[in-house]
Amino acid sequence: MNEDLKKKNKRNNLILLVVGIVIIISVVAGFAIHNHRVTTQAAAEKFAQTHFNPNVKIDGVKVGKLTVTKAMNKVNKNAKNQVQLKNNELVYSYNTNIQTINKAETQALFKKQQTKTPSDKKYKFTTEDLTIAKDKLNALKKATLNYKINGKTYVLKARDLLNNVTYQNDRYQYGDTAKLTARLNQINKEVSTLHKSYKFTVPVNNKVKGKTITIKNKTWGWGIYVKKAQRLILDAFSKGKKDFNGADAIYGLGYSTYAHGYGKSNSEIGDTYAVVSLKKQEVWLIRKGKLAVHLRDVVTGTMEGSKSNQTPRGVWYIHYKESPSTLRGTNDDGSSYASPVKYWMPFTLSGCGFHDASWRTDWSKTAYLKGGSHGCVNVKPSEIRSVWNNISKNEPVIIYE
Image (cartoon, rainbow, N blue to C red; front, top):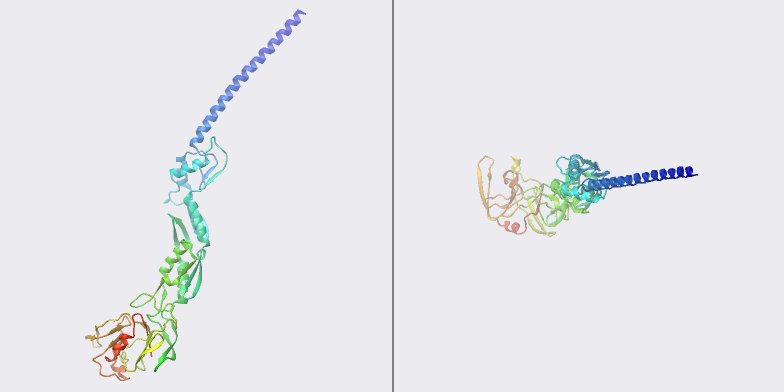
C-alpha cells in the first residue's frame, strides 16, 4: 500500500516537473517570440520611414523599397517623361533634356504612400508636369476653330492639321505644322483677290455704269498672310478659342503691304475709284458712287517703242499724294530727266501716276500712240486740281484698254 502510494506520488511529481518545465519553456519562448516581433516591428517601422512601399510606381518606374534619393535618380534615368501628340495619339518617350522629378516632388509622393509599416498596396503616381501635358494634349486633340474670312467659314481641326506636338514649360510646342500651312495655302487660293480677273462695269461718257469689261487686280487686292495666320491660329488653338477672324492676317502688294479692298462692295472696288481708258484717253473719278470728275483729254504712256513706256493695265491704287514734286527718270536715249510738277499721285512702283504736264502741247486723242508719256497719265494743268481734290491715298485705279 505504501509502495503504491510512493510510486503514485513520484509519478505525480514527475508530471508536475514536466509541466513546470513546459510552462517555463513556453514563457521563455513567448518572451523570445514577443521580443522578436517587437524587434521586427521596430525594424519594419524604421524601414517604412525612409523607403517606399514595395508596390509603388512613379511614371511607370518601379521604386518599391527605395529611398527618396534612389527613387528620384531611378525615375529621372528611366521614366518616359515626355508625352507627344503624334498621328492623333499620345506617345510617351524618354527625353534626356528633361528632369522628370526633383527631390521635393519625390518626397511629396513618398508621404502620399507612406504607412507605419510596409504595405503591399499598389500605388501608381504620375508627375504633375506629365499629367498637365497629357491633359493639354488631349484637349488639343478635340480643338476645333472656325476660320472666318471674307464671308466664308472654314472649320479647322487640330487633330487633322498638327503633328508632333508637345506641352512643356506651360506652353505648346508645335513640331510639324506642314498640314496647317498647306491648308492655309489652299484657302488662300480660294479667297485671295491678288492677280484675280473679274467682271466690272466701267463708266461711259457721263454714266457711272456704262459697259462691263474684264479687269485684273495688280497691286490692288489682298491675300492671306499665311505665316502670320498660322501663328495666330496656333495661338487660338492653344487658348481654346472657337473662332478666328481671318482679316487679322491678310496682306497686300505695292507701296503699302496692307490689304486693299477686303470686305468692300462692288467686286471689292468699293464706290470710290478712278478709271482710265487708254483707247479713249479719258479719266473718270467716281466718289461714293457718283461721277465727280470726267476728263476727256488726257495723255497716257507711249504705245510705240519700249513697252516700259506704256501705261500698265490692271487695277492699282494711289500710293500717296505729293505737291509739289519733281519726277525723275531716264529717257529712251539714256539721258536723265527731272520734271517739276505741281501735283503728283503715283499708283505703281515703277513710277506711273497722275500729274500735270505743263510742257505738253499735244493733247489730241492720238498723242499717246507715238508721243505719249513714260507711263504716267498726263493731265492738263487747268484740270489737275480737280483730280487732286477728288482722289485719295489707297484709292483703286482701274486702267483698261
